[in-house]
Image 1 (tube, helix red, strand yellow):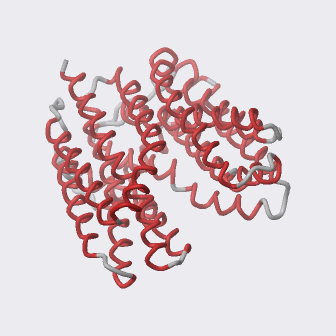
Image 2: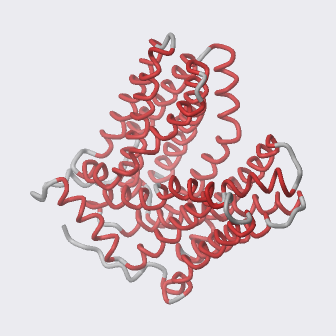
Length: 399
């Protein structure tokens, strides 16, 4: 029963903070654009959010040295307070404050993700982690369909400060959910005498040594990164192949979002019945089929391709993160989870830029085919012994 209660509280965290965070992420860029008229400065808001993920392994080590549940509550409360400082923004002269708050958002994402991995490990039975992660992914993807519209509407009606207040209030709700968790025995802060950098190396080394985990994280990283490689090519499909206006990207994004919602709900069953390796493998296959269908200049086929990407891409991520939560020693979970998150998501920034340059040199369909091929190749090791044995070969390490 405790696991059911804790799972519901984690769903509450996803719904509350996810809605506010998604709305605020869009509103921040629009706000900077409205204040400065610069699209480049507006784009920097996204960079501020994602840049701290590069320090994920180091921040994860810090999480392992702090009381995890208290960290979740405190980080949410501090971030809510930071958001309220945006009420002081009155003109272009205060734009720096928006950037600073979004940078704080990025740091909080890393801390919360790593802290949640540790608390989830203690709060939810191991055999239910996959299902909980899958439902949370579906909720996150569903929010992406409604929260940006809500944030844009609120910004237009009442200004950026109102969106900041909304995001702060949702983080307050998340802090209350974290505080209400009743996890099992949480490990105390690590006190192994290692320096912060030494502890970080321990987390990276664990992930590198455990081949089954490493393969899952590699497959997830490749799938996410190569979806970024295909980003610019996907826009050319809309304009050059389908002869649709650029705004049609919103329709296809909704199709992918619907696929992600459905995929998240289905993933839990795959994880329970077949294990993490099978879920990651089939997720990679679907993620590869999607870009290939984008090469067919028919709107229904392209839409189907985006749906398949929406279904498959979350499977690779959920499988990797669930395996990390299930099979990492409690004393290492913060740094290993943060390292895995960095490995999965950080390369996307580079591949988006590479994809944008590639379509200026080669046909965009060649870029889509390369993305599909790379996704499958990265997942091929999952079809060997691990597909049958799952991650049972991972042996717990003593700290």
